[in-house]
Image 1 (tube, helix red, strand yellow):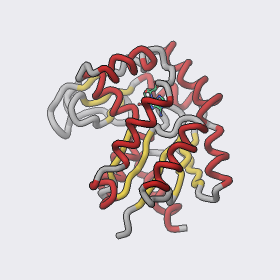
Image 2 (cartoon, rainbow, N blue to C red):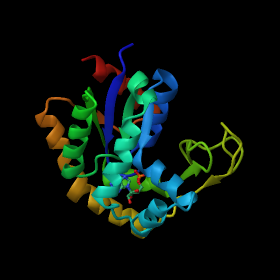
Image 3 (cartoon, helix red, strand yellow):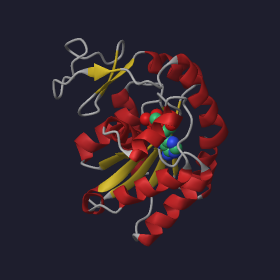
Length: 218
Ligand code: AMP
């Protein structure tokens, strides 16, 4: 299969991470999640991690310069060239979208689809409130819709689960505000390029995944 180049747009908690996981495990596409990379940098206590933490803990965006540079490095990898990518959480504003286009042009790559996962704020707030992630492999769980088999233990790698520091009520409100103000305009940007696929993200993860697959064929 020809490598696919995708990106997922949507508010926090809409299921971008879950769909990236499914696209990776079922189609072998390489997920590149800016949030996951930032959290790994924070855990490793790097300079970038320390800088990013100051913004992330308050639900604000990390500055474009460091974010774009970090993503450019990932996009140049050989694995990405061979298996394609699904971007999750990047771009998050129009300047990042323009920078992404330039990076792809430089690497002779192009986007096949920008997938907008659509759900109301009240749906995503409910999802964020019960969300847990694996400290090691990044798998995502939810107290109601996707509980782990053993409490606080990852089904895939047996590592402990955690709740993100920015999944607290105040940071959630700020992240949603920034999403509507700064990130959602990029949906129009990709619509204008004729590569936008809108998917109703209120269904179960598998149903959403099937809708994405169907949309990729159209
Ligand atoms: P996420 O895991 O995608 O919800 O990202 C968690 C946090 O990381 C966000 O709330 C931002 O603070 C930061 N972040 C992730 N991606 C970006 C980006 N593309 N630009 C700026 N900040 C980002």
